[in-house]
Length: 117
Image (cartoon, rainbow, N blue to C red; front, top):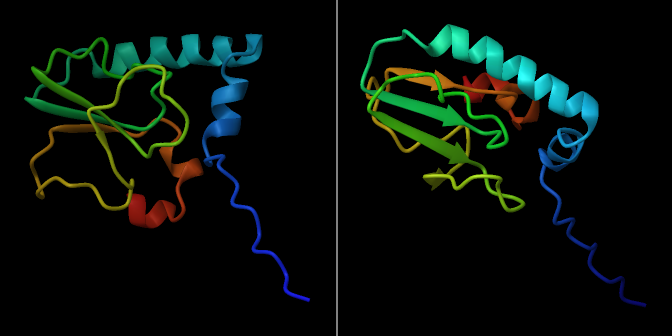
């Protein structure tokens, strides 16, 4: 008897978080995180900013850097369009080319948080 191959799960690591973020406690958390990030990133100087992951949260909305990108690891259709899709531990940017990198919930969803950092 030949065993059939295991079914591949199409769910990505962040899918459960994305589902939870649409609940009332999740919306409350997003509003709180938006307020904190708006305060922190508003006056940071630079030219190139990257948000890595969690498209449900616009972590750079209060920042005034002229070049801002959202990078996503893929998965379900994002709430807003990502500029690029890549692995968090293999970013396609040269060293010292980004002035600000925001990683909202990226470390707890990463395969290897140390490599991501």
